[in-house]
Image (cartoon, rainbow, N blue to C red; front, side, top):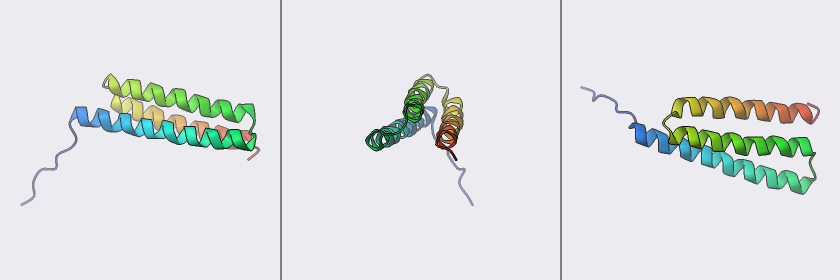
Length: 91
């Protein structure tokens, strides 16, 4: 006999997604520091600034209970930002 699988409570899900967004923000900070050290273009640095804003927006969405929307925005936003960075560097 199998027990019913229990998921996260809404509060746990919010905290988890806020933590994920915070980790993403930290990762972008590390990459931005590396980019600044390598003398990257202002456009590239601006994209990482946009990633900070995106992560902050996701944290706020999660805090207000819009966790699924926030994770969708975070995933799609980072894919777009990383793709734009790759494209701006000349493929």
